[in-house]
Length: 257
Image 1 (spheres, one colour):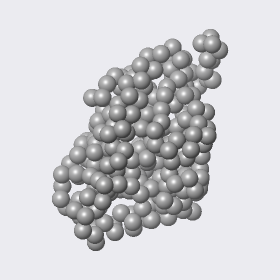
Image 2: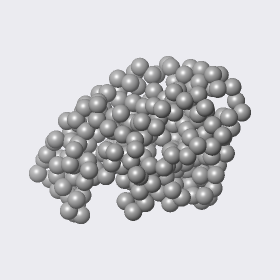
Image 3: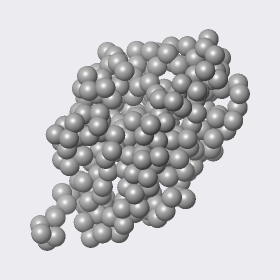
């Protein structure tokens, strides 16, 4: 288990907290592997009724740790990041997310696979894949156009445009936007604890039915995105973008025209 993950149990609720505040909860391979392990075990543990995923009161996650990402980029569906994606995708029980501050890249796309999402109004969500010479991941190319329409999804995925927690709630990505980080965490915890009072098998069956119609198509899209994402990581555009990020400069894509 990564030292940057905190796991707490309370009344059937398992809270999985990303805790790397000095790096804005940037995700490493060890963190992805640890989160996958926690989810797999929680799914098999009958005492766990729901999982709450959170960061702190001021940051959810800034996305991938770029240095770790460059050192050992994911090359297949067995990589740590895809293990986490698979574990969350297959998780049969309710997953609640509490989002404060930045939620970048997978910090936003993982919300599309949660059942309840609560955000602070001033949270900043962003999927800057194209900015890094990459492509959408974790089913976002399928889910977002269906949820938001093509035009708005294009702003988020083709331009990498950021949006607020207030907008996320208005657009249906989140259930509710709250006034502060503390209020967001408290609301998410309150709603997650409600599952302790509900019939567990009925909840699991209901989630399965809700997810079933698009499940296999979504699985194929996630795999297709993942394969292309891996290819794009080795592309000249991505190498330029990631190098520029590490050198704290603006990438120059003019030579690729």
